[in-house]
Image 1 (tube, rainbow, N blue to C red):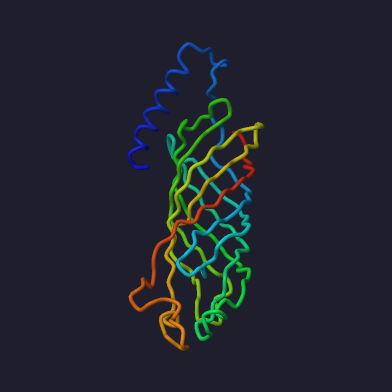
Image 2 (cartoon, one colour):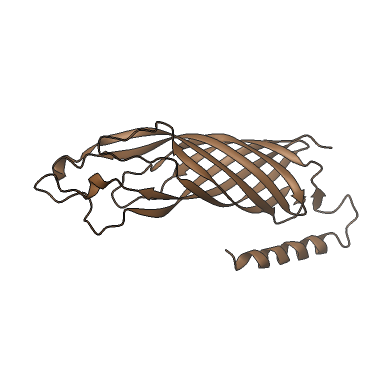
Amino acid sequence: MKAWIPGLLMLAAASTANAQVGYPPDGSPYRDRDYNRDWTLFAGQFTGERDPVGVAPSDGPMAGVRWQMHLTGPLYFGVRVAGGSVSRTILDPAKRLTERVVGTEKVPMVFADASMEMSLTGHKTWHGLSPFLNGGLGFVGDLRGANDVGSYRFGIPFTMTLGAGVSWTIARSVSLRLDWSHYVYRISYPNSYFLKTTEDPPILPTGAARSFWRRNPALLVGVSLFRPR
């Protein structure tokens, strides 16, 4: 991704320059964005990357709101908050191997981040389209704040976000937005997963990793509203 960004910027700049030479103002495929702030209502599907024993939140629907403002040139700053109902598996390390899977549950989750976004067409659209890349920092949390029967708790881990997508202006004050976001956070296991309490081995061997990072994608579709100047 780091290697591609300079090339994408150069390509976008060259395309913008070429497209505006030889076109009358009303014939150019490029249009200025005549607004500096917008609100987006979005919904989609969160898909957690599976952890070694499968107890972390896995997948489920999510929905939220995003506020964004134009800073300068192709750069934007945005804040996003969402909620979701995500499935996970419950394990009880005190039981025999064949009985350890207690069941599944829906976890109420909150997602929040602040990000910088780079539009590949600058503060303009091309035939109404504006592809973008973004990245930021935030957190993801389990709103219940309690341990399960096996002492596992997801908690509120620090999160890095990476994403790409496209915005499509369909009216003077409305656009559609497609985001392919990735929430990157660390998962940690409790000590109970490493203790032998029955004739069977523990859930995890003593030397296994107790925490690790996972990349968890979410595909989001939204409607952006703004007030033209």
